[in-house]
Length: 320
Image (cartoon, rainbow, N blue to C red; front, top):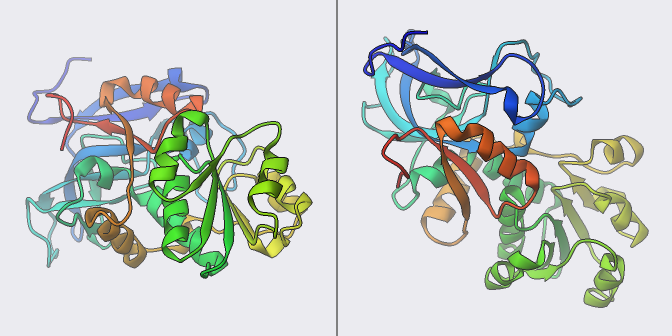
């Protein structure tokens, strides 16, 4: 394919078959035009989420949206408004925004209903904003589902991951004592954030009994890997367990499965402002150029990322 001129060509990530990161490609197309009631966003950063690779790998998912091939990829993005369709009021070209557009976020440009956008608050970087939509809404909704109060002892699995690290901090802000599972390399980070770290693997059940001799009141599971069964074995009531990752356990037990669909723009603005104010941290594990999307997902699938992985559309390097 002959590339279009730089000022009229737009890249996007697509996949034409299911598989591993090797199925992801960069496709060039004309810059899309906003229809009436839409805006054109020049994307700066796009988040990488575990749900993305579960989708492009073809794993069975509780996904209400029909998938067809070829498909775009990604959900989270941040950028600036570059064009306004007819009948769009209240938005200006050049405004920094972020949000989510299922299967279309990993691109240089996208068109979207501005009702789905949130303005980037002062103090929030574009990589943070670009990684926040799914992660932020999921963390806020899962914590709200359990009505955390002072005195609760909460276990967060995957506490150094994107959703987990926000979930754990939000629980701590509610006055709970928070225990978080993570690899040893992330224990110092969790301690700095007020989270008591515990290692995965053999001995976790005993470590939890020692750390919380009076019991754990709530479990927020972000990774699966037997967390639900362990929680039940430790006597945590099923209705005090929320898992966004273990679909099998949700089918077997009357636990909760509240995720990002239960939170909207208001909640997203709230968590964005907390991060902008420095009250909550969202670590950025790494920033990859859009053309290195396969490497970004290889990193995500390793399970060793701390915080969020982000794709940058800026050719000159990392964005701020």
